[in-house]
Length: 324
Image (cartoon, rainbow, N blue to C red; front, top):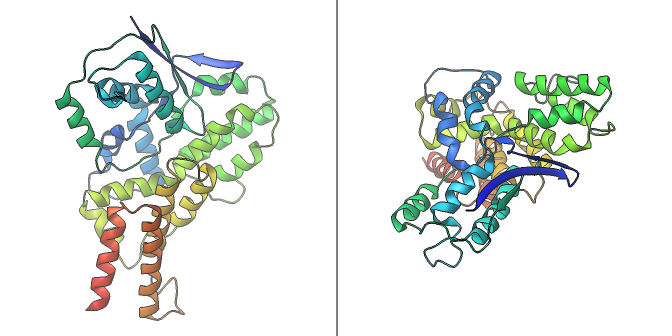
C-alpha cells in the first residue's frame, strides 16, 4: 500500500519529515480571507494579525497535502487514462510543492511500489475541481516552521537569536518597511550575512515577501468580490493604499523573476501605481496627463498578468471616466 510523506530539505544533511506547516495552495484563499468580508475598517497590521490567526489551522497542514488532494482527484493523471499511479502522483507533487513553498524548499516524498495503481479518477469530481480552479487568484502565504527555526537558532550566537526574534516581531506588528532601522526589512538585511543563519534565508525571504504583498492580496480578493467598503476605499480621492507599490516592488525583488508569484505581484504593483495617479501625488501633471499615466501603468499591469480582472475593470473605468 503506498504512503505519502512530506519533508523539506534545506540541505541533504538537514531533513525533517512530517511536513512544514504551510498555508499553501490557492484552495485556502476563501477560508483565509473570510474574516475580511465585513465592512469595518482596520489597519494593515491588524489585518495581517487577523489573517495570521485565521490561517494557523491551515498552517498545520503541509502544502503537499493540498496538492495531494488535487493529485488523487485526477490532476496527476498525466496520460488521461482514468487511473493514477504512484509514479504520476510523485511527479505531480514534485512539480507543484517546491514551487508553492519557494524560496523555502519543501520536498515531497512518496513511499511504496511505483507501479501501484490508486482508485480510478471520477470524471465529475475532476471536472468540478478544474472548474473551481478557473479564475482563482494566485496567493502567497507565510510558512510556519518553528521547529526548524529552533533547530537552526540553537546553534547560533545569542545576538543573532535576538536579531531573528526582532525580525519575526516586526513581521507580526506589520512594521515591514518602517520605521527606519527597526523594520522587518532592515532586520532581514542585517541577518543575511550572519554566520549560521544561511538555512533560514529561504524561510525569512518567503515570509517577508508574503507579508509585503498580503494587504494587496486581501484588497484584490475583496475587489473581485465587490466588497462595498473596499470598493469605496479604492475609489476614494485619498487612497490609503499608496504605500502598496513600494511593498509589492520589494516583494518582487525578494522572490525573483523565477518565482511563480512574481508576475502576479508585478501586476498588482502597477495596478496600485495606477491608483496613485491623483493630483495630490502629481501636482505638476494635468488631468489628461494623469489619466494617460494611469492607463500606461494599467497596461503594464496587464502585460504581467493579462487575466487580471481588477486591472481590466480599472482600465475600462478610467477610459469611460475620461471620455465623459
